[in-house]
Length: 273
Image (cartoon, rainbow, N blue to C red; front, side, top):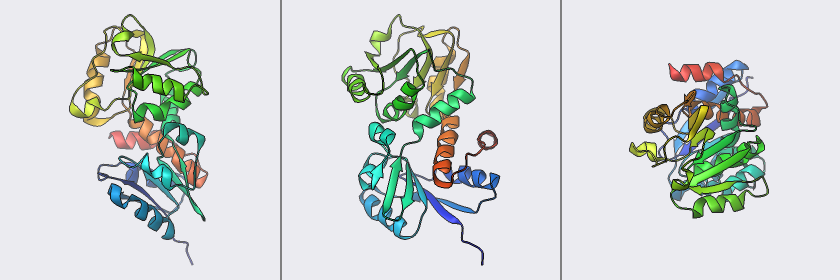
């Protein structure tokens, strides 16, 4: 008797736009694995009940997207250190007694930067934005040993809070956007959601060092404002969107669940076609 495919899902609201149901079956095919993966629209008020029901129903793992990444952490039996620091969970793994939470965003970013040939070690790195997206990537970026990691926001208190939160992981320099004037960075990462409104944070000019890279956590139409700003920077060598990060963080989840590290290149190429 053939074994039923293991079941996985991504939960969020809205979730119809998610690419995860396209990504994970392609990963599974690389290893000849049977896998069922679906997208589930879950309202915040229904989150706890749905998470419990999916465990009862035998789901092996879940991805979590907005707006549930913070709230779902409290529903886990335990969470990884990096998820606790990020204050967010995007990957749930089934245990008989409950869900184990992790955050794969930062590792996914670092893997995509390395795939693109963008160095982190010994380089000056700027994260624009100090919200949840920034919180999810700071730990792995610090572990990659930049010479300096700066986080900027319109107001000083958010970057200062992040510097305090991650001080055991490494030094983080808080700045306001305006205080960046005169600085030069080898890598600038946009961790704001401004692009979803067709906007771009107001930043000083000439922030990028010669041969530097600009990376946006957003992809699709939301990437356009940052891409235009990045292309205007003198000496820019690489401008990249966050689709590669999405695929890489999905690969980390897949490895956590199934113990296989998939090849991300063909999957990313298929999504870009």
